[in-house]
Image (cartoon, rainbow over all chains, first blue to last red; front, side, top):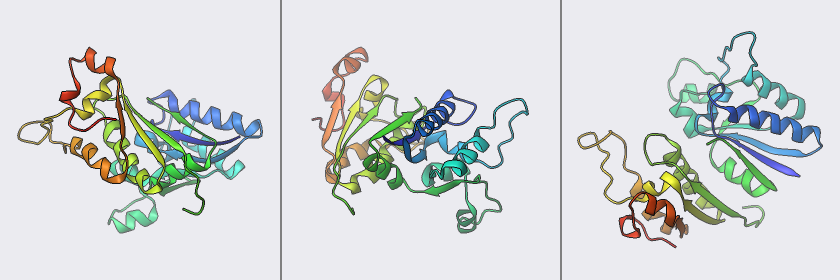
Length: 130
Length: 106
């Protein structure tokens, strides 16, 4: 089965990001494919390179990055949601005249069309969040 | 579109229009999605029914200093998004009737 994943909540604040990760990992292990993981609402905060959790806790951002590397996942942060929340990649930081960028490895920033496309191309779009 | 796949999209709106950003950002998905010519429906349930309420006052002078985006639901028809469904029970629980809605319902 080809899945699209939508993550609507931020890391650590809400279970949704953990559940989405576990689901994605389990699906891949079972031989399913993940068309795209799209991060929306506070979900975009899952892609912050500057996240520093306590050492005895899971590292949600790095976990996504590692999974993306291992399975060649497409992790997409919504650009509109990201900009509202201070999430910028190198290009956007330059364009907006900001002095820093903070997107973690394996993530990219793009538009909401990528979410709709994932809905069309996937056999199931699974939504995580309230 | 490269391929002519048409799927059914149902956007489920369960949150009040302000207080959290879910409603506003969900509406943005609907607007962007309209360009993909899919079979789109919107459902409003629970506090989501408040999203359609007439007479929202949100300006800085009269309210919480946010943009009143309820007018956008009325504009959806122009994007061929015409199937809006509101849960009757949710409305009744909140003392609302269809006359309180700012937009036409399916």
